[in-house]
Amino acid sequence: MNNKIIVFLGSRYNVLEQLIACESLVNLKIYALKGSLLETILIDNGIPHDVFSLEKKKDFLKMLIDIEFDILISNGCPIIFPVERFKKHQILINIHPTYLPYLQGKTPLNGVFYAHYDFYGATMHYIDKGIDTGDIIYQKKQKLTKDIDLGLLYHLAMKLEGVVFKQGWNKLKASNFKNIGRKQKGNPSYFNRTEVMQTIDFNSHNTDQILLTIKSFGIETQGSFCSIDNKKYKIIAAEKILHKPLLDMYANCLPGKIVLTYDTKMLIKTIDGLIKVTRFFRL
Image (tube, rainbow, N blue to C red; front, side, top):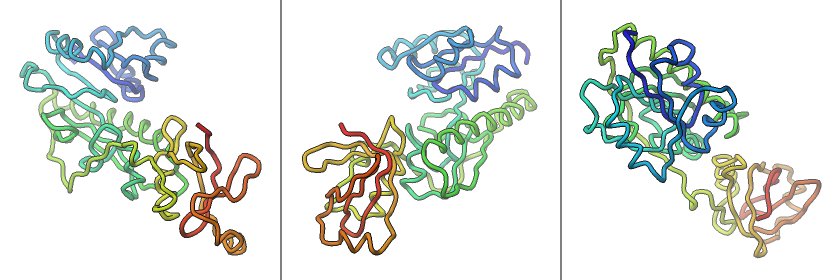
């Protein structure tokens, strides 16, 4: 690779794993987001690295702009790069966990369910002045099936990032790192989760809307939130009740009422049915 100096920065590991497998650590400088899974993996495996934090992102950006490197690879880095301040010969690359231009943004995987996509993907692209809008180096998508929840989607998308990076990196090397990008095609969409999106209102949301919200944020570090009888809950997983005798039994109950608790589950009345909550926390 003619001893090109590479900077990798981010919070995820699958892309870096592929990079380490094919390039020497001698010319690789790694920066892990403080407190991220990447930092933990690097420590556990004794891989040399530095850390950066969002609290000191201005200092970190200044350092990146000042140092000498040829290629910067970003993966899970929540910082917008001022591309015009980097040197002209430097190549800035990002690996994003969706099939761009669909679901640009900082927390896009929630949007796969929330916005009713039937596929997931990953994209390796050049970084430009926009957010996830740069020309595409390589991307791949997979059909989504109903058995995939948010936790599995994260796992699959992160693994696919590694696959996409490996293919894209090989393309770049074959071109001697000339610009091989192509414009993004399709109607762009953008997604960042908010507290409002994660909030359930049993008096206005129907069963399908509630279940969509729960599925879209269904991991323990996120969750969907509601208040029942002045008590706050974080719901992780739930199912729609279809059994007519059970629906008829509680048809006259008010929306938001917990009509039954058993084992670690509870039935909650909605405006048009019942949901069975299978994972939740009292807050």
